[in-house]
Length: 206
Image 1 (cartoon, one colour):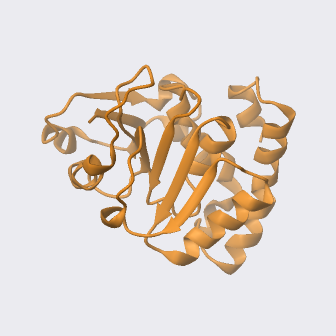
Image 2: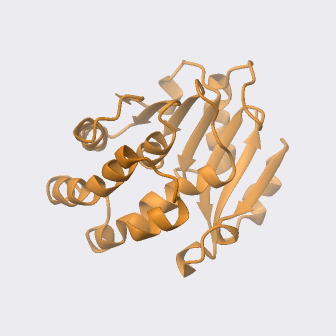
């Protein structure tokens, strides 16, 4: 939790309380439904929560923004972002029902009011959003094909509507096939831990 307060010193008491509660909640749920590698649960704040919050280092969602988290798993990056941006609406979806259950229960336990959940595939989701966020669920080209129908035309934010995707490792070939405007942000520019040396946020305008 110290890493969260270090990089986000302006958290309100409620946000601090919500972030603090996540460790025990995920630890407990993970014993019943495996949403995080058992060996990795002790790294929850660095590898999952702080990683998710990397998106907030490259965009500050304005109040009223609507965001779809596609392939949220146990709630990443959607739940940490929803805590940080209480005036933004987040809709978290995943094709695996038991993972959606975990994310829903955790959001309820910490009193998140700005999130909704659905057990559904991205291909079946028809609603419009300002942005889609995702954490390396599939190659960018495939992801963009699925979500292009979900991007609203009206603009509210500093970045034009589109995708913010958390990725890692070598991406040259994956990015070559993307013809749309894109920006790659290195999370090592924002976070000093070695874990973030190869981690990136990829923005694609849609």
